[in-house]
Amino acid sequence: MAMEEMDLLWLLLPIVLIQLALMIFALVDLVKNPNPNGPKWMWALIIVLINIIGPIVYFVVGRRNY
Image (cartoon, rainbow, N blue to C red; front, side):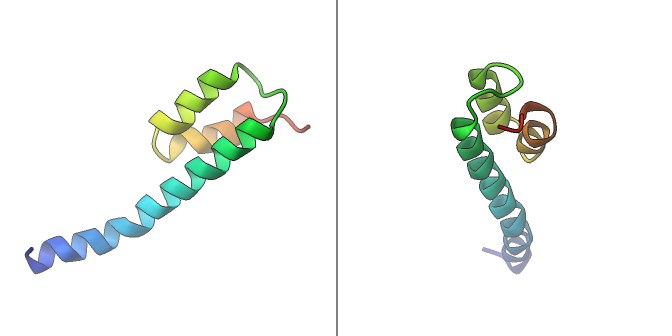
């Protein structure tokens, strides 16, 4: 690998880790939440398929306080 490719990988690593952590935290919260705003299957798809924005949208719009 060229040096530029290695630099790019190190720059992307924090973004990938943040995405993974947000997705896991949102999915765990969704499973524990007995009554989200909307069906759970829909929120699971949004969280998993829409990178970084999906979990944030779930926490802002889909999560109800229980």
